[in-house]
Length: 339
Image 1 (cartoon, rainbow, N blue to C red):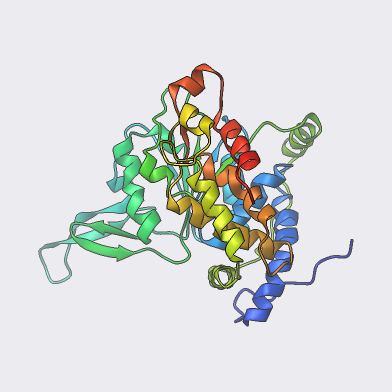
Image 2 (cartoon, one colour):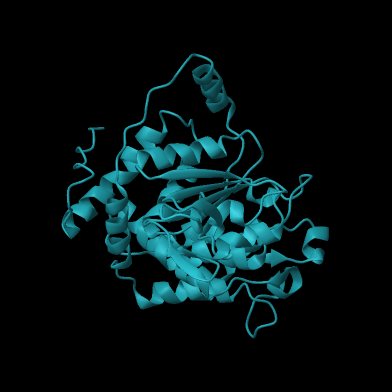
């Protein structure tokens, strides 16, 4: 396979045509650069790239020691974005995230309140182990994720663009974790599950990490280019029947509504909302562009169903007693809902 063409300098302005061409090589180049640090996990990298190009936030779920933090830091380096890591702990306060006003000596004499910005004022935020802190502190990110701004003492401060929150969480069955509120979960475009590596990939990790410092990654994009990508993604047309398919998938997950499958009423206590339909369509548009297509297919919607829906569907006690997972519910939805 021939090498992809060189990317233009990150400071160079891009036409819409150049953006489309650049997107067609972005996936391959990102895999190559992230692969210098991360072994395997290609579906995780692929879904992260979709979220970034669509302008969405990511929740990455997996056991400790699976390189979730290293993966996010590497992607931030490749995208040449300002980066802040926030370690979520039980004693973390909302002001530790957003910032606070402090008293400082004024040049004119006396003292004045000066706002000291918190770590949320960066392009990419790693909310590490977000479910290790109580819901009150988790919720301090809600306004930032939805509006790209924070309000402190009645003053609204805008966050730098582009702005992404990439949060990691350990499985909720582990000791010392707090489930995220449904309202906050819904603000994550994708919930990406990272699993253990295969034996060959784990051998490669062990060999690489015990052999000295690895190769540095190359910075591929700037924040301005990512914003241009996001604008082009939203201009991708989608056929009415495919948009309706995305809406039907989300609507079919809502119990106690006319026409939903029986297994939904049996196993689900809460289904996906309208934001799920929006993210299915936006993610499908991004996936199509990354595949070199200017149109969205039903397969694009189906490919995004798991990461978009798995954190928006809440199974009930009956499902848990029968060993039915949310992944099984989504699988049956894909089998049941007609294209």
